[in-house]
Structure formats: C-alpha cells, structure tokens
Length: 80
Image 1 (tube, helix red, strand yellow):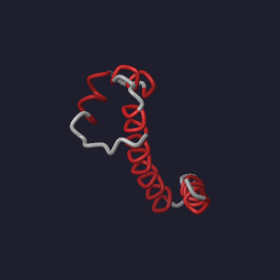
Image 2 (cartoon, helix red, strand yellow):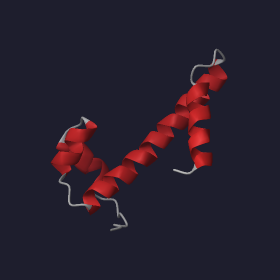
Image 3 (spheres, one colour):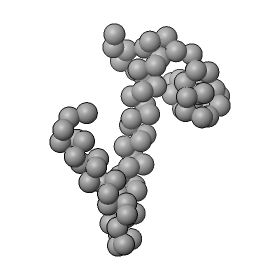
Image 4 (tube, one colour):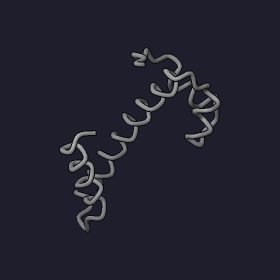
C-alpha cells in the first residue's frame, strides 16, 4: 500500500470515532468495502501460492464451504 493510501486508511479509521453519525457511519461503510477488497486480494495471493480452501478458511475464521462459495467462481490473475 502506498503512503497516500495508508494515510487515507488512517484518516478513515480515525473518522469511525466521530461523534457525528454521518461521518462515523460513512467511515464504517468505507472500511467495510476496503476489507472486502483486501480479503479478495489475500485469497488470490494464497491460492496463487497453493493454499487450500481449508487453510484460507482457517485463517479467516470461517468454514471452508463459506470461503469456497464466496471466491471459487472468481477468476483471479495469479501472480508469481
């Protein structure tokens, strides 16, 4: 993650503590979207390195079926 992106994440995370619900809830929604993107990138990374669905699921704290259902149909661009 670049410095600008890192600064942006820090600012959004800090905004979750806002007393203004408009600001706080918008920050939570932004972080939720970021978590989804980061999870997908790391699942792609794990699969590219030969990890099983069971290994990925264990690290994410979900069932193998859940992670497989969510990501098995995606077409990842495996990078090595």
